[in-house]
Length: 117
Image (cartoon, rainbow, N blue to C red):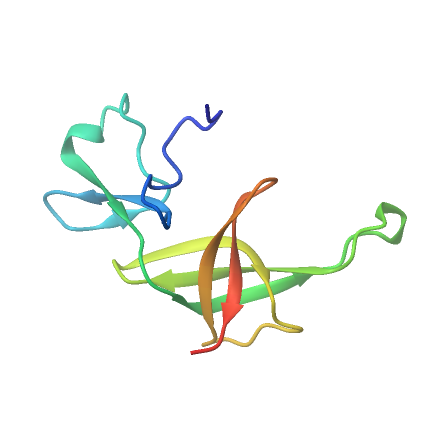
């Protein structure tokens, strides 16, 4: 059982992150609204499919005492349209415009992994 207050992944054989789409405007929001949200009736839950394009990023350099290596965080644009912020993996240094796929991560919930198209 998930400890998330909202659905994060679809139950398909190849899971996708879930967003909510406003029934009136078509606007997408991430993460999907929980079923008990007062806004839930005006939205439908939709899967975010395909790869996304890196919109912007930053590289975090944790303090040396932490023992953590630098890592990148960024905004990835997916069809919907929906822009999602998260950890970037797989590229030595991200490049704006690169393609990223959503991946499940046990610690963070999700990450984006660089893919070659």
